[in-house]
Length: 422
Image 1 (cartoon, one colour):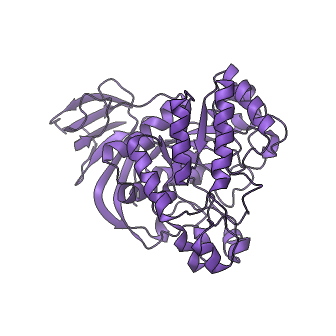
Image 2 (image 1 turned 60 degrees about the vertical axis):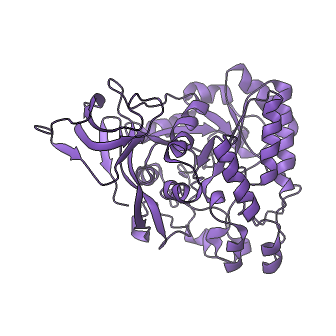
Image 3 (image 1 turned 180 degrees about the vertical axis):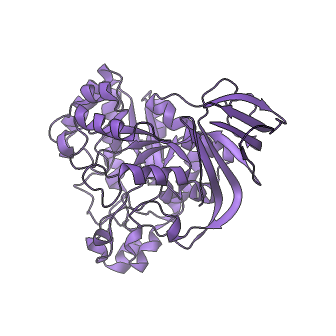
C-alpha cells in the first residue's frame, strides 16, 4: 500500500513533528517520508481534508465484541467494522463471551479469528473460571497465548481471597489485573444511581459507596501484594481521592473511565429509556465535574468506550428488566472531544498512548522508518450520528440523531488504509 497524507497536523508527543502540519508518505506499511510538501506524482492514493489531523492509532481498552456465543449482538468482524468507524486500530476485548475467555484455547480463538485485520484485537482473559468469582482461571497459560490482562469484566470479584491470590499470581509473571469495583452486597442491581432521579422513578438506586468500598479493598490488596492493578470504569468523585491517596503510598494503580460517564448524568433515566441503563450507572453532575478534573490532572489515565452491544429483546423491555449497556466505540471520540474539556493532545494520550503503555504493547509513533499505525480525524467537524452509521447489529445507543463534533476520517494499520463514512 502506497499512500500520501497531505497537510495533516500531527498529534503525537513522541514524534519530532508533533504539532506541525506535514505531508506523510506511507509505502508498504511504513512511514518513509515526512515533509512540509511531498509531490503526489505516481502515488495512487492521496488523502486530504479540511482540519485533517493524524495521531497514533487509537486503542480501546475495554470493549465487548460478544464472540463467541452472542454473535446476534456482535461478532469479531462487525466489532472490527465498528472499531474502524470509531477510529480505533486496536481493541482489548473483554471475556464476557460464551464460553467465557478463561482458558488458553479461548484466547487463541480470538487471536486466530481476528488475525490479519486492520484492527488489532487483544483478548482480556477472565480472572475467575467462567466469571463465577470462585476459582482462579488459567491466567499464566492465557498470557502465554496472548491475553494482555485479566478481568471479570462487569462482574466484580466479591471474594477478597480470590482477588488477593490473583494479584499475587499475576505479579509472578508480570500480568495485569483489571478490577471493576462494585460491592454487590451494597449495590442493588438496578444500574441507577442513588439520588433524586432514582427516587423520582421509584427504583432503589445504587449508592456511590458500593464503588468506593471495593476500591478501598482492592487498593489495600494491591499494596499488600506489592502488585500493580488497573481499576476499570470509575464513576464517582469519592474514588478519585482514594486513588490519589493510594499513589502517594506507593500503590501502582492505573485508572480508566467510560466515555458516557463524562457527558450524561442520572437525570437521563427520568425518561425510562433503557439506553441510559448502564453499569456503572450514570451519576450526578458533581461526579462528572470531578471526573473531568481528574482526567486533566492525570489521575485518570484512560478513557474507554465500554462498548456493550445488546439485542432488542434485552433493551426494549421495562426499564428495571433491561440489560445494562450501550454501544459506544463509534461515538467515543466525539463525546470525549465535546465534553471532556481536554486538549486534543490530552485526548490522544488517554485513547491511544496510555492504554498501550498500561498493557505493555508497542506505542505507535509518527516518524520516518516506523510502521504506519495511525488515526486520521477532524476535531472541529460537526456531523449527525444516524442509525445507518452503526456497524454493529445492536443499535442500543441514545446518541442516534444527535449532532456530534469531531469526525473520524480513516485509519491506517497492518499495511492497510480504511476511510470511514461516519
